[in-house]
Amino acid sequence: MIRTFFCFLLLALGSTGQALAQTSDAENKLIVLEHVWNEAQVNRDAPVLDALVANTFTNTEFDGEVSDKTKFLADIKDPLFKPASMNVQGMKVTFYQTTAVVIGEYRTKGTYQGKAYDHVGRFTDTWVFQGGRWMCVASHSSLLKK
Image (cartoon, rainbow, N blue to C red):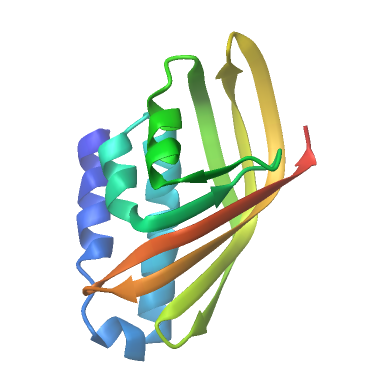
């Protein structure tokens, strides 16, 4: 399963300058990257997430916690964090030259510190096209239902 998602990642990251000229192609790649991101979180695959987020990445969680790339990746490896599923839907991509903002809804289930969680919320991810690929520079989530 990890191999399949890694293949999707390579395909999506194999963007060229043409992706900027073809909005629908870039939009599809970003949507694939969002799905790869979620699968990597469920599988606690920090190397895949490391490849998706910029070194200057900032993450703002639904509870207001703000973390940088190092903390974000450490949280993924936390053995007390056990996501079972993570799904996104209703995504909309808006482009601003070499920047894209992806908004959508998410649902995630699992356990943290032995306590079950089932969250439904919205997310906003900001992606920048740099070095021939899309990198997420900021992510924000907010709860609709806990």
